[in-house]
Image (cartoon, rainbow, N blue to C red; front, top):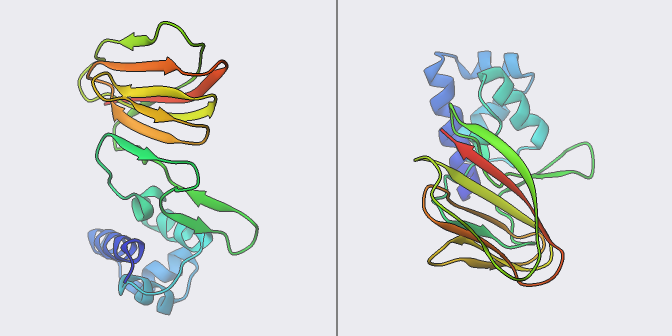
Length: 183
């Protein structure tokens, strides 16, 4: 079994049993074969995005429940080294979950830009705040004030926003998308 297979199997079984559904009833609701449900619950198969979406919809859970690795902060994903990728069966499309939104969370999205010079130092936000940054252009130091990470375009970083943190351009034209999650 793969890590992804293990996560899918555990989530599928847990959520199906939580709703007191048989594998046959879940398969009917999702529009997939019962054998597919059984195979996935046993850690087998290579499900498409469409299959996982159908199962998630039938179980009334977010798609991310199946693929989230539950990483701990800080999490750095370098461009080209993204985590779990799930391919579409019907088009040239791949979904890569960088971070799942936990229940009862709020997320604000920002486009940030900076130039070399004085770094932007931020005081801690309210307890439980997490920041997610994807660097779009330039290079910079981002993350915990005491141990920032050097990022290049395409890199993803998540870190505790409820501790001092920094955003510093190392090259002109640095820009990033920042998602601030608060609970």
